[in-house]
Amino acid sequence: MTDKIIPLHEEAPPFSIGKVESVEPPAEGAGKYWCKYTIVQGHNTITGYRQGGVKAVRKAVATIVADMNQRRMGKRGRVHLTSSSKPKAATN
Image (cartoon, rainbow, N blue to C red; front, side, top):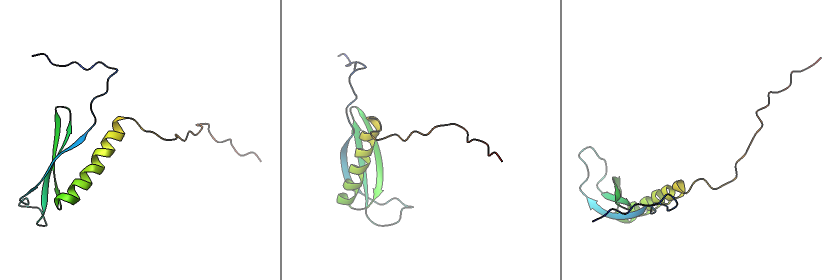
């Protein structure tokens, strides 16, 4: 079996929502509804816990995933450049 080598010109796969499932609340956690979620990118996974029902947690994780994918593509927007010249001294 050989590992696939990703050439530099190819991008890594985007992040996506893996599994979201209800779990028992942590001992020190407040509230009674908690979920465990995974975020997947290729073979990589991120596991997290969040308070709320499955539907609310899935919506929150979708926002996180969208932000992560946007970040890996670079910032897209206008850049506001300012000059670094020093202000002129006041003359009398």
